[in-house]
Length: 61
Image (cartoon, rainbow, N blue to C red; front, side, top):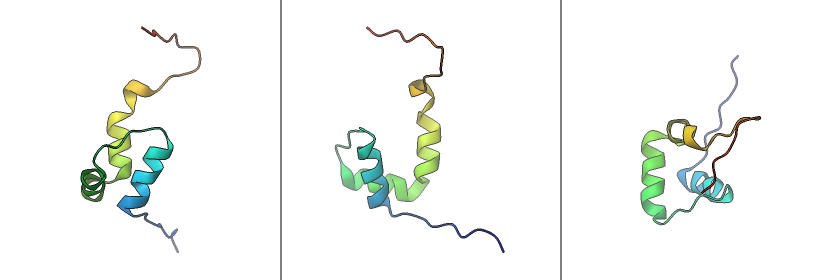
């Protein structure tokens, strides 16, 4: 048999994002978006500008 996937609630997903220092101004909208598109799709779509790979220079202004 395959692995059982345990899904978390949009409320839990917002708490997880906040625990990673993401500011959430409108919790209700954030939960609605997460329930529509999902956590993984959201994170994968917007993470690229924030990824810092080992050995890369960071231009801080």
